[in-house]
Image (cartoon, rainbow over the protein chains, first blue to last red):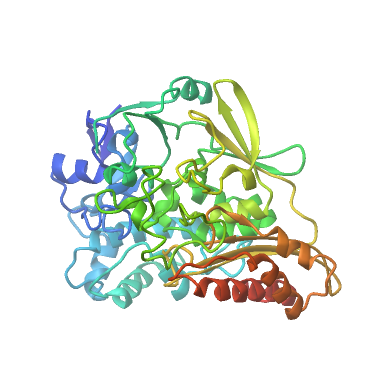
Length: 168
Length: 329
């Protein structure tokens, strides 16, 4: 069974050692997904698998046979930027841009988690069905994505601008 | 990473039947194992993917909850029954790692994750008794700020890194295991071994045994519980100290207490001495301090981690105070 990457069927690699990250970058030339630490500490390699955010550096590609993978290249629609991509530009959500694809994929996955009511460590009442979409929650939930330029305030503003008004 | 084969297990029996030799590893989310293989700490020649096995979370006849070992950490933390009946567990899970890692990591893998001692990872430059039994430990005399003050031996002071396991220890969770000779259960508190002179043998599992589920007993009645983690930054870091605690009070008197500690011990640390010291006592700061002192009496700090004794004491007292006051978790 192939993997479906940004809507395209792709056979999985035969060498089981190939990470999903290296598969995307080195085999498929999808360079949008970035290799930062390659050990699960920085979040730069974040992609979406069936809508859930994961770290492609710690994922063996062969394990994702039959799954749908979305990278930053797959977020744009109809030749236009994803609203979150535009918001990162509008709110100075980056300087060097290296962590940005991971930040944006992570934020897309995070919003779905919020909609499902997944609690976080800063959620006061983990039994509550609804989680508030506030500044503290957003920062905690994005803590798996480091930004060495320190564009965190812009990142939080960008995500807030796109999703807060929709009430997630 | 050395060459290896990959296959998916059809079910638990299939997985176990193919894992008899010592060069096979079960693969869950890969969040720890893939990293360890890349660093050549782990060098399996075959991986058996067990993520297709049961990750179902279902009530048990006894009023508890059975969690399939393939359940992702996020799936457990967001499960309605976990949040309402075992809030300490939901809170412990979301205290660990990042959301991306929690989406990948399985319950079985979380239990069997290995220490993040940097000397353990440093295959080229450091001695480690976990990696090479008997070669020595560079952490004991080295940079050991993150290391254990409880349960260590002259051979190893590496901490167990899991948050989830600390809550499971306090909750009296039972681990269901399957091997070639059949199924059995192990109490979570007995699953991990103290290092002693064989820190390379980390659990009571036999080679090839597979964790299939974690069972939670029925929740304690009238208990207040929480999980608090103290770390160098406010998120996405391993614990310096963590506390899972549940208190049952009758007025101002402690009827029962369940306490487990993380970040300071070589295994998820059930604090039975503290529990014993709390039982029947008035819920006062003084009683909480006495209980913490009882648990930490055997603490043996190394050169770099003596701060953990006082930090653990204060964190435990603060958590018990919070559970008594009914304040913010």
